[in-house]
Image 1 (tube, helix red, strand yellow):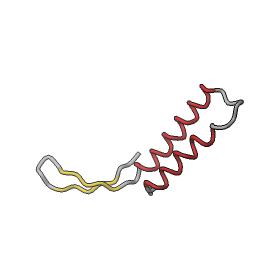
Image 2 (cartoon, rainbow, N blue to C red):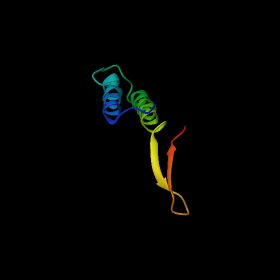
Image 3 (cartoon, one colour):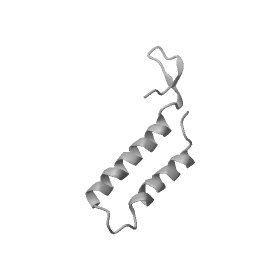
Length: 67
């Protein structure tokens, strides 16, 4: 099940908080960790989300985004 926009915002904030304020953090490793955490949060937001579109013949199509 996809997470909500509010849950996504919390996960993004947590990703930055996890590497901020620590003077011993290697910047390169911190950027990589933030990128991985953000990618995981975005995947949770998108995968499983139901969406509506239009098929080539103009019919409405409801589908779920799968990873």
